[in-house]
Image (cartoon, rainbow, N blue to C red; front, top):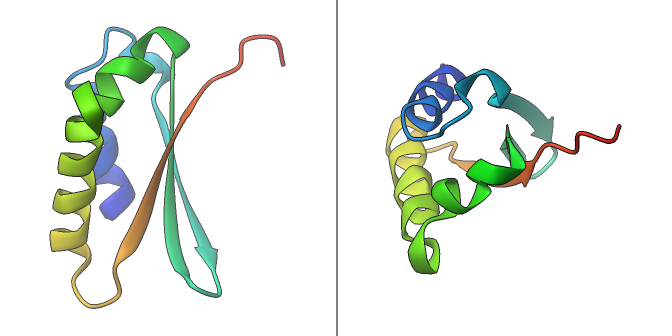
Length: 80
């Protein structure tokens, strides 16, 4: 549910929505949502001084409740 909600939010602000992929990784310390976007969209997702990324993290934290979740933003590498 968290991954779907975050993916929907990120797709709404990027220029290349088809390149957005959100993976939910379960680790010992908790859940990590890894967001991959087109390299041209990384600045939009992070925002000025990280404000947009912080807003995404705030929304995910509110949805996650007690368990919480970390959010990492990564650009897709076209060379792979």
